[in-house]
Amino acid sequence: MLRRKSVFALVFLCFFSLGMGPRPKPQPSDTTPPQVSITAPVNNSTISGSVNIQATATDNVGVTKVEFYVDNSLKSTDTAAPYAYSWDTTSATNANHALKVIAYDAKNNSKQAQINVTVNNAVLPPPPPPPAPGNGLAIVSAGASSTSGSYSAARAIDNSNATYWRGAGSFFSRPSFWWLQMDLGKVCTLTQISILWHKDYGSTKYQIQGSNDAKTWAKLQTDLSSVGGKANPTQRDISLSGTYRFVRIYIEKGQNYYPIIYGVAVSGQAAPTQDVTPPTGSINIAGGAPSTSSMDVNLALLAQDSESGLSEMKFSNDNSTWSAAEPYAINKAWVLSPGASSAKVVYVKYKDKAGNWSAAYSDTISFPNQAPKVVALSPSQGSGLPNNEVVFETTYSDANGWQDI
Image (cartoon, rainbow, N blue to C red; front, side, top):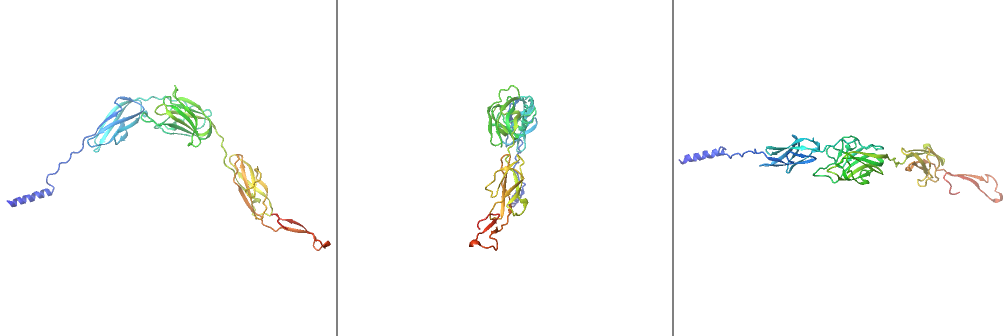
């Protein structure tokens, strides 16, 4: 009997060691979808402008993401609460639209919620043609501090009757300022700027600024307002003065959530170009000969000035003391400097009609040192010496001058 029990115990142990004993019950899989709802806007409400679509979502394990759809088109995905999407309704038609959200958990269980809304934005009438340019200046390009969607700064200068620039902003958030900047491509003397504002989306306080480097701005007109116009758009003409390349409309206070400008025209005339570039040139002594035996030489001169043209020239033997300025010519008679040095240098400077003097240009020529020439005139060779007196009479010449005899 004892032996049978031992065998039974051994079989029982083997049974469990081979994994054939009772196993733990498997845990049930997550099949419960999240709960989701749209909390804003209200179902069947009428909306306009920028609208913040808000949703709440919960799950027994955890929500992984919430998708936002407008008319079954996915617009945004949010992965953390609070779940929201800002929809710019001006990009949609004035009609009924379906807003839908879908929440997902880690097992990809999902559930959706949907509401209907009516978009009703103000219809902007087509603007009239841009202001008559008169003596208008060409605007090369435009830029802005901010842009809403595709309503870029370029639309304010495209001469179209149906486009405009719109700065960023909404009911929930608006910038502290906006600006629209025009590049005239060159410095111009300004007389007027004409601006086509939206009558309801203009500015209660703005200024016109000018600059030549687009960094430092001068105030040309301040404390301006576009408010009060009955037609849309409303044209404002502002007188200007000053010489600038860049013109900027700086909006300090918006009339509404954001500004809208249909068109801009700047009047004036191109400022004359100021010549600040000096001439360039060269000088050649005695036709480029390496040396000369005469202190009197001829200078060949050549200068160029592509802007205002050549005016005068002046010369020096030491690059310190200069001759009086004289009209520019291609030749000049000149006397080399005396002295023991055999290297003779001549300098020249050229001046243009704008008053710009060039740097000094120079050329060097060799003048070999020679012994002075002395000729005895009296007494003549072999003549007698009357009264035992001797009188010397000579002639002397040397190109560098003489020091003693």
